[in-house]
Image (cartoon, rainbow, N blue to C red):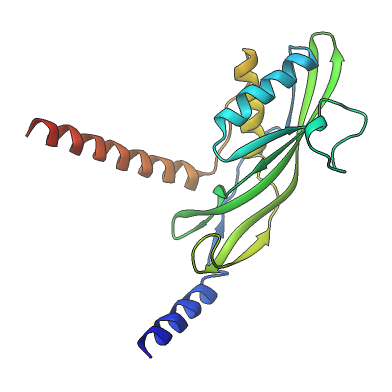
Length: 202
């Protein structure tokens, strides 16, 4: 009887909190395309070597490795960036914490010249988890489709630029709540390190 009541209470709380989240405003949207000072093959290598290694939980699929109708049939350098588990949303929050976010990206390359390549990051599917019952992979989640934020898209472009040594790329714009959340998380990390250091010498 007690377990049943606890289960019903958990379900009730989960249902009530489904709509209890906020969407933060991004004052200045980030660019979702950039012209790099590099040939398309060099850009392609940068995507395959840097983006996947730097974004935890993601896999980059090149056109020849992944058959997807969304990918252009004419541009062999297109790539699909798919995540295997949720990442933290930088725009949707509940009680100060980011909601789980499931994006999928198409990275499209257009060769402008031998040393110029335009890269566009399209978002083909974006959802947030607004509620659930049980634990991940062993329960049920309520998901909601949302508009792309431009944050993750530009982060991908920045990673490509870092690999290529591209200069002059502006910094990424973030929501205030995400920056506040990151500051709190960093403070927790610093406190743990300080505690470990103190215990080492005591």
